[in-house]
Length: 286
Ligand code: NAP
Image (cartoon, rainbow, N blue to C red):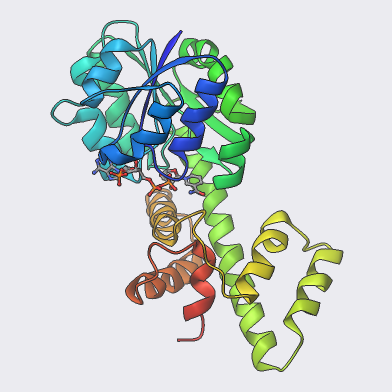
């Protein structure tokens, strides 16, 4: 099966590489062409536009920054919908809101294609290792057809039903994560200002019910002031914004997410957009 991939950022590049390693021929496109180079070295073919990728491939995957990028690549000039032929598949793995996913789905189906949303839980290392958690929804025949490729990128996947449900599930997961990171930063800051041993605090958290891979992995790096990007802070704030919009639409009160979002907005204003989202610690007490 010939596969396509558009959006070769922190996540997309290693995900695409796993498809090549899995034995697939791959055609790819990225807005900034330089990002294609390592994949050309690995045997992939670079296309000039998303439309060319979609026209050449049975299934095209996308991993794009945000709703604006997802719409531009799918619906814009020379976009996916300009190239999709009847029966071909488009799988958008970006984290977007349900309305954006719905718009893309309608447009894909209008040109005879099939659409699956499949946002992922997991960051740079799981993307490299092919151990992402994939939250799919939309066309079930495409979900089944794409299963082999999805399994090259992830260790677990679920099918959540109609288009929009995968997007909503992903926003719920990341809203919880954003709130956890905000609480973690507050705790580290309060411990530091109380002259407590913050390394000891990490050990205590890890030994009890609050132990989790995020605190375990990020905590020591944060104490060392290492904010090398795995999940960009700007994308975490985007996800909180989209989760708050979902809560607003459904009249669900989300005060914790609102407070976390305010903290991430302050971090953006301080210029930390492209650092890892754990850099929230830098501006926690501003
Ligand atoms: P990233 O490194 O910022 O990559 C974003 C990609 O989108 C790049 O390929 C970028 O192209 C492209 N792009 C941005 N605006 C565009 C536009 N207007 N038109 C065309 N292409 C555009 O982001 P990432 O970390 O890989 O994340 C990608 C998606 O996965 C996001 O929705 C994010 O929320 C989600 N996600 C990320 C993680 C993580 O840990 N990083 C984990 C789970 C989910 P250029 O190279 O030209 O800028």
